[in-house]
Image (cartoon, rainbow, N blue to C red; front, side, top):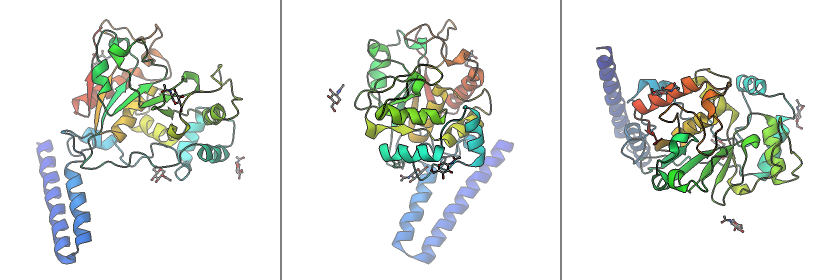
Length: 324
Ligand SMILES: *[C@@H]1O[C@H](CO)[C@@H](O)[C@H](O)[C@H]1NC(C)=O
Ligand SMILES: *[C@@H]1O[C@H](CO)[C@@H](O)[C@H](O)[C@H]1NC(C)=O
Ligand SMILES: *[C@@H]1O[C@H](CO)[C@@H](O)[C@H](O)[C@H]1NC(C)=O
Ligand SMILES: *[C@@H]1O[C@H](CO)[C@@H](O)[C@H](O)[C@H]1NC(C)=O
């Protein structure tokens, strides 16, 4: 009953707001105003040109409560100032070294400092695949399917070479940090996941002096990647995922989970591959025997797993379960 009443209320609210819009039109009698209001009216009903749009509201309270469409996703010079709350949390993850302001200054004299993905709208249907590293990909034959999507996001060292049949060969984005870095192809965005200021310094070093060879372990001093395709997750985005989607479980969210939430913000349709265990309950990579993030202590694999399942139940993502 409560749900029903809420629906009625939302429906009424929608009716009322559209009435206002048209009254407004009537009195303004201006083409510019018409276009503006008509656009916002339509975009409240459907955010994109796919049959189901991730960003559509009203179809899931659970989702709407967590999803903040205006959160900064990628760092740039203009949005780089961190709130006290984000700064405290982010600094807590690292043994601090370096002056953030200075590092940001260097970053954006080297890498693109522009807005990405602000092209969402009723005419866009951007389809994405988020490809995790689970052993459940082995034998799946998902390769051709994965390669069909507009964006294919891969995580850390998950290789394509030798695994094309199951994981595809296209990579538009690879999310990594110094300790998980690998060389990238010419059409792949390097998306840095900065856990610490040193990671930002490493990125600069890798494209210039190449002097940083060690963080808490040995890391590559350089990386083959296109400088003009570099992107950096915003620390505020990391905190947002931790607060809203991981709900404070674990120390910080896993790379796979962060990538999935990133996809919810830049894609209209999100397909998920290579998440979860194999059918016999094993949590290892498809390319080696290393355990996937589930059992690593700093993440809350169980809670992330529940959230991912919930996203599927609410029609926000489509999970492809794999084979083995
Ligand atoms: C960081 O660098 C900026 C610019 O050089 C300077 O104004 C600021 O005081 C420095 N901050 C710290 C904490 O050293
Ligand atoms: C920086 O990112 C913000 C969103 O976080 C965006 O509004 C702004 O336009 C971006 N700056 C530039 C120069 O593109
Ligand atoms: C990438 O581009 C460089 C030149 O910019 C070229 O030499 C290289 O062969 C390209 N690599 C691939 C894998 O296409
Ligand atoms: C993850 O969620 C699925 C679906 O609810 C469940 O079958 C599976 O046991 C969960 N995995 C773990 C390790 O919690």
